[in-house]
Image (cartoon, rainbow, N blue to C red):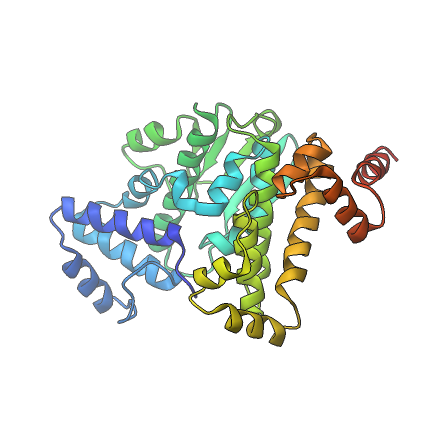
Length: 337
């Protein structure tokens, strides 16, 4: 499994915290391997290695609440594409949908949910580790989630409820300072309750057009999670990332460390051409912009790198059989129906 920026940053912050506590990285890794971590593991990638490493760090540093402290170290930039997508969401409800759909690509463990009377329950899906290890991972996940929430809303999320399965510790000051809300210990499941009024809370950095773009990048990563068409996936990803100033085939080949000829050959073996992928990405973004934003057709044409709006209209008719305005009206009528 490929390492994500989030995993890399968590690992880096953990080593820094250990060093500050007088525990060298060599000592931490060596003891973690003795405790069962893979000999080749030098990063937090595989889940079982992560829990062993975190538990070992807690023991060596004498800090049972290391998960809580570590979660506060990870900023929203560490979430890369997912972080940008979250920042562009309209509200907490959309943020939760994003988390649940793309969580398995960006997070270990991923999150699950259940709607209940008056709100939404969120919890991390834990399938391995001892109760002690699961507690560390849960506290890390909840603390990191709270830190992201502060970034998106720039204020404490009043009204949410944090629930932990373990008994209330003697000192809850650290929990109170991080979550700044109601905390219940000894619950049946460790979870977060988000009331409806919180779900509808606007994100301070919401941006509809950016959300379309970042959401599609997340969608591409989800499709490639178990995808054998690696070259096609990478080209599509690079095109989405460069939307507004699209890379050409030679530039994309350079990003993939291959010649243009090799790239064309690899795409051919996957039964697709660069031009077809370019058209697909433009069409995908066009329909998303028309459906989910109030951007004018001229604005959309500009975002898709068309010098003239008329050229965009002609291409859209070729792709979909109707004009952009007709497509938008049809989508509006379907919503009202």
